[in-house]
Image (cartoon, rainbow, N blue to C red; front, side, top):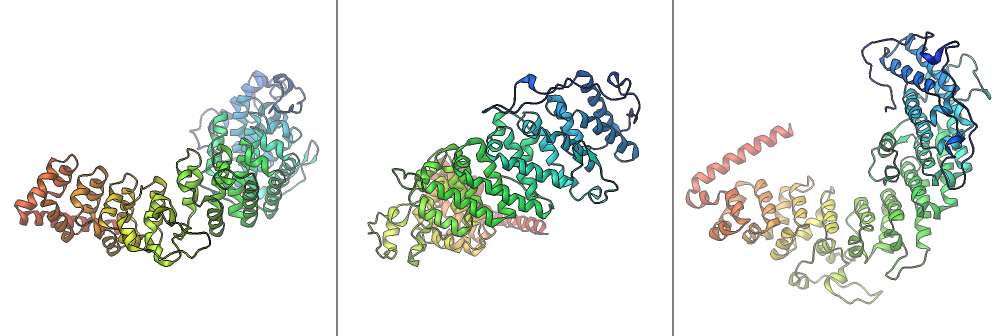
Length: 589
């Protein structure tokens, strides 16, 4: 079901404005009213009342609206006839808005009709639902009608009809309110019972959509969730990756956004630990990060402050307990994504230091840790290798293993003591530690920074066997890939960082992951570098041919041709290099 105007269909049977509209239209031309029963407030702990407590839509009325919507889709996209049709249909909607909104089929049709609605008609339908706002917002069908109404704001805000009021229209409770007033009224209603709306399975959808509308930012994940399934599983899906769409909103909306967001502070513990309520806070952080950064930072501080004040876990910061919890870990992911670098640094120092390996291995805590790595904007982490500066050359093995300097090298330093200088002999004598998946991701991330010099210098300081171990590792091989593909790494830097692989090419070729790395090195190598690689491999040609992975490398290098017909091999490789340069030239153009 669409939320916006549909593409025009071919003109077919028209829906005459004022003509007969089916069996339910005899006499007055209106659809027969359904059985009306006054709605009841939802009982505690439930989203909606019993089935017989809300109005029902008669089959005749449902048939009328179905035919009306079908005719509207077939009508020309513009023109007086269409405008009159929309006006007449929505006038009938206004009379039965509650019955339509709380009927499964009626709700779907009403959502589509709102996508065609002009400003005043939308305001009249909204006003018709206002007296039953709490009931509609927490109804499994009604909630999607309210969402659809809110999602019309990017289309209708600033509409000329808002400014050119020829006459003051009357609603059933007095003068018709403007769209801005209706949205602010909804926000006041939500703030009046904030915990209830945020904690209700359906009501939380309204809060999240309202936050986006007030901030003038629609999140792609939330729009997709509205268009898709209404199942509890879809409602509880985490909000992680989003593509925001901004639109202009009045200043009153942004001020109201700040007021609504302050409601989170009154019961911060609930929004951290309750599964449904937490999603509202996650959306608020994303919107505030874009439109009210100071308010966003204040909320983040409140979250971290509360979590840090809980009882400490046996293995360190109390925050670690919440990193392992399904609900609070999702919220912490969002906090990490919207936090500024100084805040990230203090979080690392106070809570993550010394726990990276443990968190990386945890099935839940590894997700917030990944968000921390995603949010890093500088390679100078607190792995105890920033000072003294001689330790910086050891950053690659530390990052790869997610270990602090003292732990990696087995040093016993007293607390408060001046850190010792880096010992090159100690570093070269040690085998490369295990490369973790998150450590590899961190290094790949840093290699794509605009200035990855620190990482490249550390790679260049590795011994041949250490760099070989990195390239042969399932996770570490992707670090070498990043060296080869990052636009921030020049050819000269690339050669310097990987120079110690010379003498290791045969071992590299005879490894599952190393052979793939060697193929990638070969693809980007100039003719001179290819001669060096082929010459080294040729010395142990028989060993390569007998190896499961090595014989593929030998074939890729054309090693037999190199050994027996060197001149033909050089011509062949020269032609390949020429084609590659031509292709690169075309791609650059």
